[in-house]
Image (cartoon, rainbow, N blue to C red; front, side):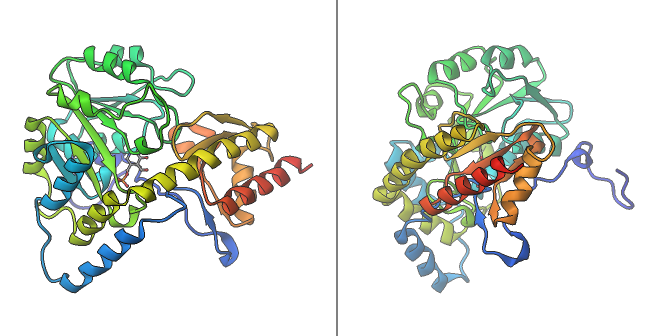
Length: 366
Ligand SMILES: Cc1ncc(COP(=O)(O)O)c(C=O)c1O
């Protein structure tokens, strides 16, 4: 692509801007939006109240260090607040760390169906994205290690991964870390960790605590239901926290987000309800899809990857159009190399039943 006028840094014009999940259905129907892995339960009422209370002080800058929020996160998870860096969503944290450590020609490794922001952040720095083949839509540790070269600066691992919903057990994460040179950062993106119900899974707290090159990222956008406020955090080795604090915007997290985040963390019941809801409906949707003859990738997150046949009229694109005509918006994931799949966020009971009813109609069409 050529542009008139000033020329940006190399790599930037190679970026296809991130396309968020759609939110509008045709014909002005109120949509059932299951395209962005948002929680069907909404945020805690306490978080909403804390957010509203901030409206009285909008003339003030936020606390640039998000001190109270880092303290609350530290208490909740037993972490040292000095090693926590908050950001405007984990998207911003991915961007901050990549800008700080990746320069032109440097390489960034991630699994081939890994979260798209890893590629976009790398290109924005003039770096070279190195997607690595997966096995059964799951990150392949050996292949990722084999892709590391002297130019590699960061390895990103979304665990569980979006959009596949798959995860690797903690032993495998440790093996990945062990195989990396000490100058390569392993970023464990644990955006969906609260939903995972597996004994062999860990978000990565201990690995961060016991090494100099592992960072764990978390978000308030998913189970806490605060996606609109843009709030995430990273738990880092002291040296990396220092670097991220030097390069982030001085007021990158707003006061309403800080207040809502603190209140959300304190409302443990709300999080438990969200987990229980997911535990109930994730297996149900998966089983119903299978009854319809649709393959589903087993997921440990709050979403499912549904596979469609390739036949015209039966494929993911046709399914997407059909569902939209019923006011149901799932996520096309062709940008992830999964053109024959749709990703569905687990919704309310009513949403889930409506999707299955619509898919039943779609699959049964002649
Ligand atoms: C794996 C993963 N990481 C990070 C994010 C970004 O979350 P945030 O809203 O905190 O920027 C998402 C959002 O979809 C995600 O799926």
